[in-house]
Length: 503
Ligand code: ADP
Image (tube, rainbow, N blue to C red; front, side, top):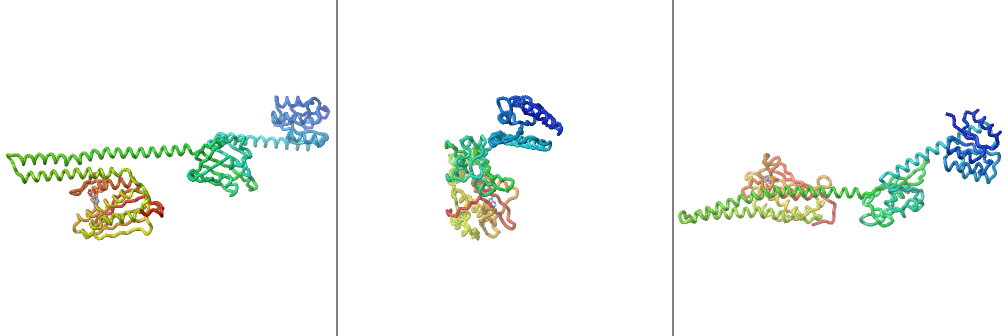
């Protein structure tokens, strides 16, 4: 479709000539006016693709004023027509941002070139404006804060989220150094953190912000943020500025802490449930000796009665009462000792020292039973975060079980090997390997259950306690049968790097 051109020219003959010229070279004439005011009205109300505007016009406003009004109200491109151009006129005309000048008289070719150039320039400006509008709308509606800076690190743009988080309006922040508006510090140390946009500007590459950064708003409000800066490079590669994109992490941290709370609650619930189950088992475990006590006490009374007087039997029954009383007492003591340590005293520990400490306590037993002991410790300290007493209890329980298993396997060689090593990075693995009776495949899973025991005087709480202590420390416990004799119990604990821990 041919472009529609409005002619504004107060010389009717010239206007007619231009009209004919336009039609000849393939344009359509949308109107001809002699007065600037009429041209403005027509452009606003009817519309046209381009205005050819004579500078000198009859009426109150001249061509330059009319072009200014058109530019301000309807963005139709204007090309000035002029017979002469003094400096002052050119200066005034320039302020209206015209799309071209044509010096009268002009050839068809010159006219066509001026019109095509003006239409092309206008179309690309339109496109640019649209894309700017699109970006501005996008930036205004995204949830991230965006700040753009120029090559001198002064602010050239800020979106509404950035305004809210920094407490600065874009109007006030415009052209100010970014460091003044975007003040960030490390949450823990309170040290000033250089903003990533400035760094991106210096380095010419994208920069991520270190975690734990808080943004301090103008009113002192603090917001944990996560952000990055990226340089803006012009087509020819020169860095002309940078953009800073940052995000309020409050919600995220809040969600994470809620999640942590929920997990803690869940594990508390599961502990309570286990405790519920445990109570039933404990009641059963204590009930048994209590029933036996009542029965034996009744028998004892019977043996003491006049008719059946038998002091030997009465004594035996009384001894059984004592034995069962002790047994019930042992059950209670075990539970109490476990419950007492429910608030662990967590600190960095060298597990090597804890293992050696336990072995010092129990070494007499090795000697008495002629058990040969092998201890393999890593060269480096195996540092874990934990409660010393609880972890010693784990090692002691496992070593005691190993000794008892060896004791019960009369014909086997008597060997015990304890090995501590850094396993996968961040984990310490401890293995306690014995040459005892070994594991019964059928009951291999049940050995960790509370009160499961295969020993005459056993209580069956050892492994259950070990497992709960280790899981509270982020570790785990399992066992495998050995190829030759006995079993190996393994436990793992998360290790940390701490050269000062030597407890
Ligand atoms: P208890 O030692 O009082 O029986 P535990 O919970 O420590 O309680 O152990 C439960 C059971 O696991 C033991 O009775 C035994 O059958 C089995 N067990 C534990 N350690 C070993 C071992 N080193 N070798 C073979 N069996 C073991």
